[in-house]
Amino acid sequence: MKIYSVLLVLFVAFTGLAQHEINSYRYLIMPEKFAFLKQKDQFHLNTLAKMHFEKLGFIVYFDTETLPDSLVDSNCTKLFADVESAGNFITTKLQISLKDCKNKLVAVSKEGKSKEKDFELSYNQAFRDAFTTFRELGYQYQPQQVVKESPNTIKSDANSENLLYAQPITNGFQLVDSSPKVVYKLLATSNASCFIAYKGELQGVLVQKNQQWFFEYYANEILNSQLVAVKF
Image (cartoon, rainbow, N blue to C red; front, side, top):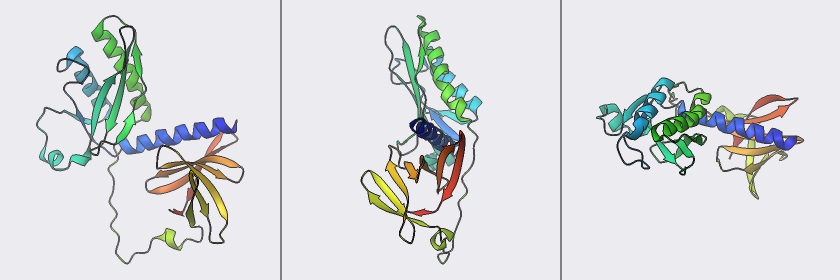
């Protein structure tokens, strides 16, 4: 049961991270030809992909279109979409990915599948199946606000009596208070913004959201989230 709870919290955390990241972007660049196809907009798949992301709320441009100066000058304000095929002659399998300007994977869909024999129908069905991942994320554009601080400003975390300090251990960190007493044990995951976390008998995750860290765990089948002031 404990393992199931940790896995469930991990799933919620990773989904939350993906949602938070894509919510920071308003614009999306869509290729007019996917690499696994022979022609531009073959089977109308590129048009279908553009239409679905526009319905989601993105402003979408094909990579062959003339972009506004604001997008040309600021490459990192937009996401880059792609669709990859991993199917065979029996089953069409498509997966949708979104990357940022540094080629970092921001979000990826499940593998959409179709066994229709007609190519256009099968590609359309497989794409729609894969796209359910992004519909479930509940995209809503939220522009990031830049907070300017005076050079003399001292952040509150630094003065907090509850501030914890990260000490490296095998496969992760331990968080200690000023005693020093070990409060949390963290195990690294494939995502640098999320750790498997142990606090006494509690098991959950330590996840970063909006530049802050939260300990999230299940108790009596209810998801709890606690702000943690930590200095790595």
